[in-house]
Length: 83
Length: 83
Length: 146
Length: 146
Image 1 (cartoon, rainbow over the protein chains, first blue to last red):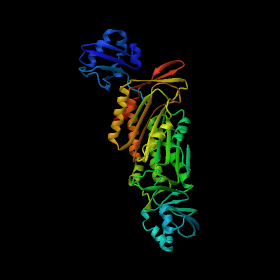
Image 2: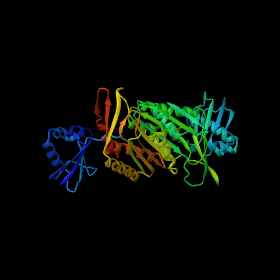
Image 3: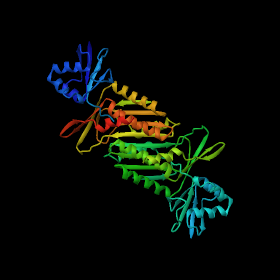
Image 4: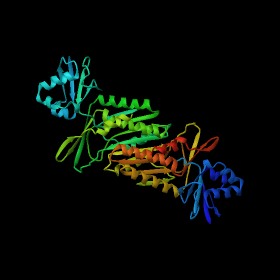
């Protein structure tokens, strides 16, 4: 499965890229995060406290237990601070 | 005691005057209203339903039981509809 | 704090901008405006009567009370009197505060008190007659929450 | 309903006037604007990052939800992104309704959801460094009342 992953705010800064394309067999968001953490220290740092990370699947807010089947775009970011 | 009495909105229209000066010995607003009612049918009509009438004494909202001692300006008007 | 009672039209947007500009420490500005509504499609004009002297006194008291209840950077109340055409702006309030919850609460408080405690009376004039607007029960009830 | 996400500055007052003018049946217009606040006196600028595509989708969803909950004549949400100077207007919402209670409730609802559910992130840049604004616990709690 090919996924586009987007990073925003301090997740983007810690990982050093706003987006990347990955090949993955992860079944859930949590499994994808484990794969990313294993890749590189930058990811391990960015995902060190998941309570501070939010996830959107195809531009809809979701959660770490959500399945990735059929998903094309995953985004990770901190709690939102608009307004 | 000399009092200036002001009327607003439909009270003004029913009484036919926006203001008048009266000499009165009334001790309370309710007594003043009784005196006015006795003067003329226009007043009896205007004050026929006191639940629909509000009173201000020297430009502060008050009520019919309030004493008139020291008061210079009495205003009668319907419930307010600003905004 | 600014209280204005006037017959002249005012520019709601210009007032909003001027208000927001003079409260630079406040991150949140809430404004409300009331517009002459022609629910029947028959309204020729609205006429607003008020009690000069008491009006300014009542509005100042309401604004001061809001300033005691919430931490506000500024408050504006502006209300017209006299004849108004459908679509014209009757009045506005604006509040500025550090946080939005305070600005919203204060603006609603101002409106609730202004509706039932400031001496304004509205009359609607149509082609077939005229009628004083009756006070709504919900407006009196709205005061109970504060 | 109008949703705009833009880098360009906007004129809050002009937007308020245009919004009020196009909702002639609505007697009540509420607007809110958020202004870059310099609490420390050290702020050089604020930078707002967002998630193009998801932002518009989230704001449209929030506005539609408000339209289902209250009887609104119109809704506007306008939010900037990119660099902003202290005192600049970050964003605004406006609601128009027949009665003020609906316009106020809807505007507060829009703000509460926009704060915590629309993908914007603020960073503050001072002479000595930069820091992402942290989400306030009270902003998350504010959602519980709806």
